[in-house]
Length: 141
Image (cartoon, rainbow, N blue to C red; front, side):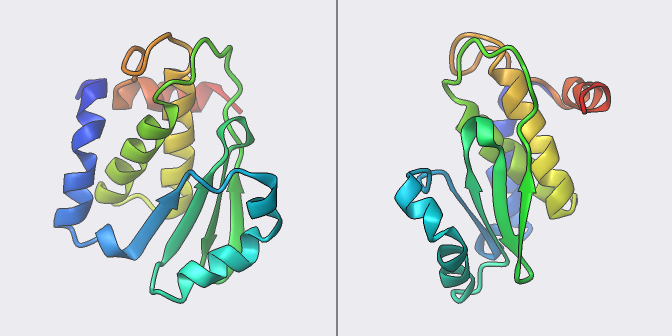
């Protein structure tokens, strides 16, 4: 599987009926919105979303699941270009959930995938394949 296959991951999640069980938000980065972050998570949970997440770039990702707030730190890399990192994160998350990973493992996999992409210029350059990502995860804290 090459890096571009992440774009098809959403179809896997949809076919497995996972599309309505979770939602990923990247727009809630402003300090004003983060101050009321927990209540915003709880608001979306009332609509039946099992997982509500906020990607925060170098701040990692936070998500609300089963009434609890969780966090995955971003992997430290020498950043060249962040273009497309959020898209890569979301594609990797959909792939991971579609493949059957639990949410915590999917968030870690997605964070690693996005971090690896950031080591290269351009939106598509540097998107890792699954094996590259797993090796990266084993070598980074």
